[in-house]
Image 1 (cartoon, helix red, strand yellow):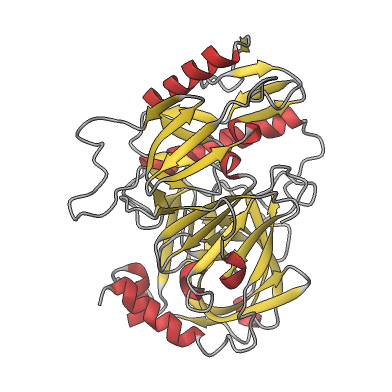
Image 2: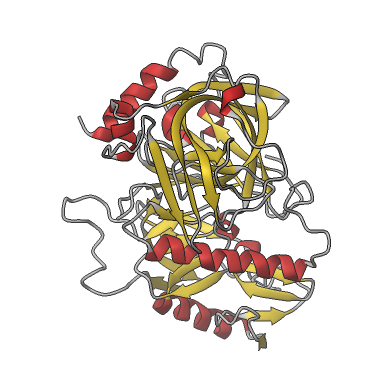
Length: 439
């Protein structure tokens, strides 16, 4: 049995006693976009153009961290676009966490802080919680979480390195976490592994207390509760930042009905990430293949597993694709749209247009279809707002950017208004176009 399977078994046994009163049929949690007026990060003094520009700069920084730090998943990015309210400890203390499908550990700032970034809300004090329990070092749990055990103290210590010299350091512990579900309900999870951070520095906002890791690694939230939710979660991201997005678990996470397409979860260098295999793009009648080099373009790895070339990431707004494919897409759109482009304000070389219309793919006599082709004949048809993003009331820019990295990223603009479901048992990702404002 692998260390990962062993840890999942330990967690499953621990958690199996606490779900008798939980929502066994599934439940949903609200996601708050960081630029929503409902978000503590919302800046009333920013214009729409400034918010869009800042979001795209965060995307660039996050992409560089995701794509160029491989295969070192411990080096990750604190960026993200969606926040989740949750409660921790007994009695419960409400905090705000940044949801991150590109990292694993659930961590938050804890008292007594040796060195912490400024946080508006009270910092969690584990000594006031009846359910907090440090994981000792050495121990089997500590060894399974960290991969090896080098004890500097009697507690199991973690360390996460972020870009811009940021970091979080502290103790691995067991604690109770409660999620507020849609409809004013609540679901509680006992004995979750968390990181209690006593030294935290870096690109963190004072409006949230830490990160909720939702990656594929064994310490993420979804990996720890996977047995209780039948290995399933999904999310539906709204196009409008003022609307509510949803994170679904269990039966609520099932993606079914007319128009569902499913692609395998593929394998990649970092076990944390959700990899898929993009085979090509079709615009109108022109089909373009995803291609890097003959040596790197094989669809299977040395062990015969499907090899991923794209990471699905909820925390990156832009989608990043190989430069050759990007150039083909731009050339095709330029030829068909016949509009006069303007300078890309981000200097990424993207097509940008001054137009009040958000439907430039729709022509008087026809609609220009833009389709992503994933492995398993999963064809995802995009709509105008997935392809072109409104930077300001008068400017649209392509929601894709070029990269010279081997790994592409599917950003959340392309994912908007799709119900996207992950089944970790079947290792699949499913897409269904819906209106996430009303879903």
